[in-house]
Every structure is written in C-alpha cells, then in structure tokens.
Image 1 (cartoon, rainbow, N blue to C red):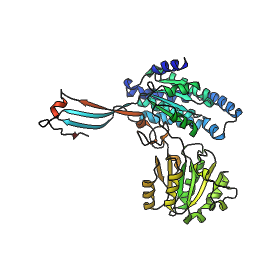
Image 2 (cartoon, rainbow, N blue to C red):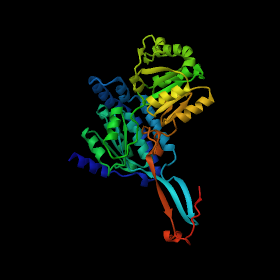
Image 3 (cartoon, rainbow, N blue to C red):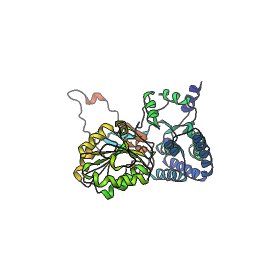
Image 4 (cartoon, rainbow, N blue to C red):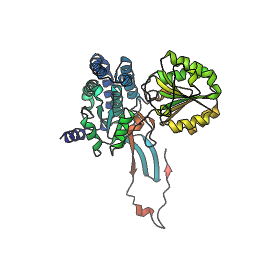
Length: 426
C-alpha cells in the first residue's frame, strides 16, 4: 500500500521545462529569499535534530554534516543565486549537422526527468539538489536521513511554498519513511536517476539494490602527494587546508604521501602543524618517528575514509611510487600533487585515474560551487555521463532531432542512392 502511495506521488511530479527559463529563474530567486527569511525556523528545527542526534550518540563527522550553520545557509543561498544567473541548460545545441541540404540533425539538451536523491545527515545538500533540479527543469524526490528529518521537512516546505505561485508544487516531493527507500529503489519505471550521498555502506547499498541508474561515489579516499620538487612553503598550507578546512567532506584529504627527497625537511613541519590542530596520524615506519603521538599505520589505514581530524601518512620514493599507491588505494575521487616540476605535473595528470586531479592546490576545491557550476548534487566517480562535481550538465540528457522534407532511407540506399554530405553546421 505504501509502495502504491509513493508510486502515485512520484507519478504526479511534473518537469518545469515547459514553464520556461524566466519562470525557473524567478523560482530560484524566490526560494533563496524564503530560505534567508526563514533562518530562525530552520535553526530551530535543525537544533531539535542536533539535540536528538547527540542523545543517540551520533558520530562527530555526521554531526558536523547535520549542523546547518549560518555559513552553510549563506553558501546555499549564494549557490541558488549563482544558479539563477547561469545560462539555461535546456535546449542547448551540442551538435548540428546537415545530412543533405536542408536535412538537418541536431543534438539538443533536455531534462533527465524524475531524479531521486537519497542522502544522510546533509540538509544543505537538499537545498543544492532542489536548486539544480529547478534550473535544469527536472522534478525531484528527496529522501533525507532520519537524523535531519525535521530540518529536511521544513526546508521542503519552505522551497515548495516559495515556488508555488511561479511553477506550482508538482516538481518536488519530500519523503521521510525509511521503508520508502526500498520502495524508491524498485520504481525503475517512475524514476530516471538516483543520486545517493552518505557513507560508503549506504551508497554501496543503493548501487547494489536498484535497476535505476545511480550517479555518485562510494568512497572519498583523497591523497595529497608532496613531490621531491615541491615548494615546501606552498605545500604546508595546502596539506593543512586539504585536511582541516572541512574534514567531514568527501573531498578532504585522507592520505599524505611525502617524497623521501623532502621528507626530512617537510615532515617536522607537517607534524608540528598537525599536532597543533589535534590531528590523529597513522604513519608508516619511515614517517612515524616525526609524529610524537603517531600511530603505526596498517594497510587498512590507507583504504580508510576517516572523515574527521585523522589521516594516514606515508613516505614514498618518487612520483612513480606515489602514483602506484593512489592506483592501489584511492577511490578515483580527488588527488593532488604539489610540485614545481611541469614534467611531474604532466605525468601525475595523465596517470592518476581520478575524477579530479589537481596541482598545487587543496583537494577541497573539488566542489561544484567552486568550479562555477552554481552548486552540485555530488561527486561522481563514474566515467559514464558525468564525472567529478555534478552540476547542471550532469542533470540533462540529450535527444537527436532530425528535421526533413519527406526524405526516405530508400533514396540513400543501393548503387544509385544519393550520398550524404554530412556538413557540420556548428
């Protein structure tokens, strides 16, 4: 019965594509204004969620994700307004080709359809996906974790009411029941794409239990490699930022690889900086002496997404060993090299098979807003459709549109058939 109720609710969702870009822009502006104006209500409901989560002993990393601070709200509002100013992702002609004079083929972008987002303890993610869905003309089903139930409920209500006079209410659906997750996974005729955000176990569960296409990543095991040709004054703040700026994020660095050529010069500085910030370090045999309170690392530590002020450190003998380590232990999310060598930068960029590969900057830049995408629905480590931070381009698909004048395949077949001239128009 619950499955049928959910099926009907999702079946009633409608794309906002036909309403036009100006209406979708106006809806985004209205949503941003409503969220800004309802901060007290949002904080009150979020405070209730946080209080209950603390009583239930939620981990510090999940608690950090759950808290919807003014800074996170400001960032979400800024993302909505930036989305508003971006070009319309719908109706963009990606290819245009004349098969014969006046016989024109176009590859044009359209919304995917119904997107379901299932996420744990990330109410700010709800705002991002709602905004991206609106801008891209998709309808969206939102299922948040029980930890953020009250926060999610009030956010969906604010977003729906703000957009109602402009685009109606049939584009967004918030659901709360845990049982509805399994129901969502079975609705492959009603839902076109699932985007999960949460723990490794949660994302893996979604991927393993649905026939609906899934966009996302299971792990965020990101590495920073300090090369033998690194500027160490540049390397230190990059390492600190990659770990400390927001340790619960999937793009926070979990492993630091230090070239043996600079380990004696750099590790004392890194150890001091990490000690000042109370970072727990799991270090290999060669780096352990530098960390007074370090823990001897085991193999599993280099496969661990800590999501807290904790990390693994290893000394490597050159760039080739660093690349092999990332290939063997990474999750194809985000990895960075710190080097002044253009040759080493080029080798790292070509050899590291990750969605985001950086040089001389923090791994925390792997983010849709920072990439100028307006916002993101998550990071994809898939090589199909979308990879890296998924913004508007990842939420549209394409159609081939062919406009003719009575042409038939028979005309172009056989020994005396007409020849295509396949002239690219853009």
